[in-house]
Length: 136
Image (cartoon, rainbow, N blue to C red; front, side, top):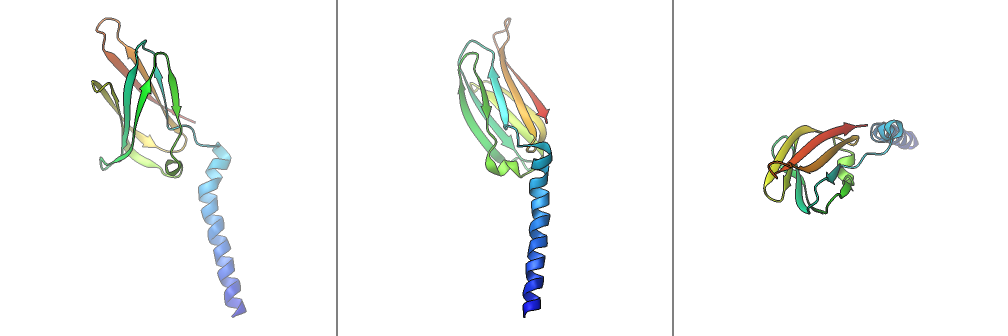
């Protein structure tokens, strides 16, 4: 009976070490996760921005509506569960004032941050949305 308990304890410790290695070691090497996205309103008007992330099966996994003032920048923190998930082939959809929409296909993981900028075209007056990904 004592030998069985020692074996179970040993197996439990090994399992904890392996799981800890795969979960915590990347954070130790690379550092803490970056924010999910940063958005900057370069325009001089207020805008309502809807940001949505869809997985590879076109199912919404994140949706947030933000109000941006003129020349305002927001860094949105990463939701806790997205710190440990690597989502491949996701689609980021940004909609401004229910008029302009832009999509961006990419992977979502703890060290990739989306940079979104809103600029008003001086000639047409339309809002242009710029999306890029920054990887640490």
